[in-house]
Each structure stands twice: as C-alpha cells, then as structure tokens.
Length: 308
Length: 276
Image 1: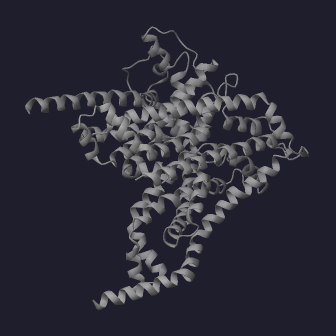
Image 2: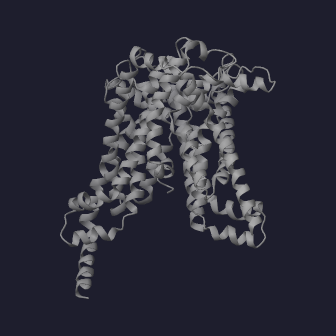
C-alpha cells in the first residue's frame, strides 16, 4: 500500500514537471528532423515559386528574364500540358480503379486459414518490392514487338503482333498494365490486413442467418473495410500521380506524347527542353494538386475513423 | 457431417488451384527476367522462345567482370547506407519526441505525410538548382542528403507507431527509480523498439536502393547508382538484353531477401506505419 502511494505521488510530481522541462526535451528531439525537412522541402518550394516567374535555362550563362505570370499564362494554352493532364487523369483513374477492385478480389481469394496459401502470400509482393527500373526493363523486354514474349503468347491465341510501344493507345495501356502489375499486390496486402482485423463472428453470424456470400461481402465486409480502403486509395492515387520511372524506362513519354504524364512532362520541359522556369511553374501546379488530394483523403479518413 | 467435410476440402483445393494460377500469372514477368538472364545470345533472341535450354552464367560473368556493375553497386551501397544511418537517427529521435512529449500534435505528423505525397520530380527542380550552385552534383554527399526527404518522414511515422506500442508506465517508473532521460532512452526504450528499428532501417534501405529519379538527375559518372547504371544499358544497342536482365536480376535480390525476412512488418512498412 505504502509503495503504491509513494509511486503515485512520484508520478504526479513527474507529470507536473512534464509541462516545462519535459516539453523542451521533446522539442530538442524533434528539431533536427524538422530543420532538415524545412531545408529540403519548404525552402526549395519557395525558391521554385521564385524560379517560376522567370525564363530560366539550366545553363547559367543564358540570361534570366523576369516574365511575371507568363509561364502560368502559357500553361493554359500549352497543348503538351493539356495532353499531360488528360493522360494523367486516364492513367491515375484507370490504374487505381483496377488495383482497388483487383486487390480486393485477390485479398478475398487469399483470405483463408489455410497455412499453405498464407505462405504463398509473400510471393505476390515481389513486383511491389523490386526497383521500378527493374520492373520497367522487364516489361519493355516482354513487350518488344519482334522479340517480346507477349506477342508470342498472344500469337498462340491467334492474335497478330501488336506494336505495344509504337502506337499511342497500346503504349498507354501497356504502362498502365505495368503499374497495375506492380501495385495490385500492394492494395491486396492492405485489404488482407484489413480483413484479418475484422471479427470473424460477424461473418459467421451472417451466414447462420442465411445471408449469401455476396450479401456478406456487400453489407458486412465492404462497409467495415472502408477505412482501410481509403488508406489504400490515398497511397495509390498519389503514387500513381507521381509515376515517372516506369514511363521513363518503358516509353519515354511517347509515342506522340501518349504516355506523357505530368511528372514526365515536368522532366521533359525542365531537363530536356532546358526550360526550368516553365518546369517550375508546372511543378507549382503539381504540388498544389498533390497537397489538395492528400488533404481531402486525410479529412475523409479522420471523419470515417470517427464514425466507425 | 462427412459430406460437409469433403465439400469444404474440395473448396480449399479449388482455392489452392486458383491462387497458384493467379500467382503464376503474376510471377511470370519475374520468371521471364530471370530466365532471359540465363540464356546465351542465340537462345535469348530466338522466336518462338526456347522454353528448355542449357542455362549459362555468361551474362552474369560479363556483367560482374566486364561492366561497371560492381562500382555501381558500391556507389549505391555508400549512398544508401549513409542515408539510412542519418535518416534513422534523425527520424527516430523525432518519433520519440512526438510519441512521448506530444510535440506538434497532428499537424506536424500530417506535414511529414504530405512530404511523402509530393511527386519527387517537383522537388528535384529547385533542389537541382541549389545543388548545382553548391557544386554538390555528382558528389558522394548529394544522394544521402536528398534521400532524407524520402526516408525521414517514413522513419518518423514508422518509429512512432512502434514507440506508441510501448506502455509509457515503464519509462515513468524508471524515471521515478532515478534513471536519467538519456538512460531511459538507451536502456529501456531502445531494447524494446529494436525489432522496429531494424525493420524500419531495412525499409529505408529498400526505398533508397530502388530510387531512380534523384539518382539519375544528381549523379554523374563517378557516383552513379545501380538503377541509373542499369537503365543506361538500354540506351545502347537493343541486343544487350542478356546483360540487362542479369544486372536487373542482381539488383532485385537485396530488396526481395530483406522483404522476405521482414515480411511480418511489410504491411506497416508499405503504409507508412498506418496499418499493422
């Protein structure tokens, strides 16, 4: 009894001190990380805003010219930018939709007590874990028109050769397929984790009450998975939005700008066409879009978590 | 009763078959990458493809001995390990501060998350200009610094999720017993989060090892990392597929092995510590 009360007293004293000295200790711990990230993100962002008001070439000897909002005004009329928006919207919406639905179906398939199937889970994740460069090279090799194994395999089905990376629509579909291949295991894993955190009694009770499997999925599993689904959606939307590596390796934004997503467009304008001012303006727009999307997802997520 | 049991087991067999078929489809590209790397030039380019052939290691021998693969791998290792060391110390300290002293509340955490969500190409434009002015391009320090943007927010979120799992009372009673703050951190918190620390470091390693965009823009001949080096093979003649697939297979090995060892933490690592 006595030890307990002395402990509680000591704890009270400890907690009382927490206000002043403790908090300072906490700030010291957090400061380096905040400082590093301020230096590496906030300062460059402000600098980028500054650059976006100029005509600015990579080569330092070419004089910089202040153009005010000129870069932004050009953006509105720039056909490359419009095309990039369209391609990005198609790309992001397409891959995210397929990855979410496919990930859910795969998760349901792998959601079982069977130890053998559980052991196979990891193998699904290999595409997600290896470098995008490796993924891109693998698919570029397989999609090659004359030597690619994909044209050979569809040839067995009686379909004639397709120049996957030579024509606009097949090229866009190809890079989308690569993204879907790489990231569906990711959504699958997230949804599996969600499924396994659900109480089993719910499904069993529903089955006993005579619900069909479809009804269990529709009215019990899906509503309970919503927080997890939103997390998967957030990561996939924003990561698809920043896709660069796969495009760079597989198609270089071509043919005829068919796979020129926003990230690749920024790279091309800045580092290939040597127009950093315009690339900076494009980047400002991308940062705004990414931040707005992140904020929306965070809002939705906190609201959903509060209600469930 | 008996009948029900058989129907369950046939269901399981059906599920097994389905899983294996889907898995085979998923892994076919990996298989194709690896198989191509084991073929000699004639086999690799034969159409229809040779499914049965005599495997050869000549591509690997060539890549390891006659290309700059080993120096690329060394560059990657130097950049990645330096970065992981700094990211882990800076990030874990911040995670502890946020978890225990409630510094900055939610806003600070969501700021870190939003850094994770910003497209890297966007950050690279101003960083490139700054790095060029500081003459840091193609130096050994630039990638470890840039990868802090990638890994510090990740370490903070991951380590916060691990530290949150330790009951605070343990630390409180240690302080009451007369242990110093640093002592608590060193003797009590550190051993308890050790598995989390290792798992987080491994994920940082994988992310930085796989990174391509920063590495492409900020390195030159002397500091080029593996992903950039391998991708540059493709600029040459299309006939190098044997070498490319061999180099790519080698580059893919560390992430796969690490992820396999730490698969228990994969969901957490892939979701920024949000899901366990």
